[in-house]
Length: 60
Image 1 (cartoon, rainbow, N blue to C red):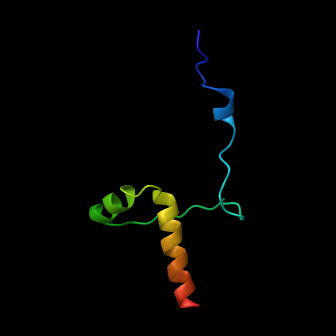
Image 2: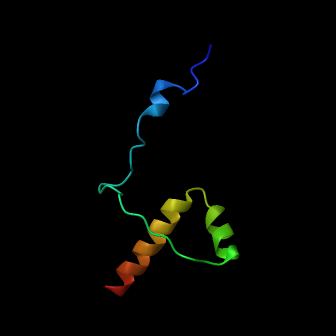
């Protein structure tokens, strides 16, 4: 009988590609068109982080 919880290697936490731990979360409102455009990206979360960081760097 297969393990209902999956393979043991799938139970380990995901390793981040970044040096700093990502422990905070941000939530904001946007249009349906913006949401769909972001969701269509390969890695929507990283796309948002990159866009926010780019804007922050420009304002420095």
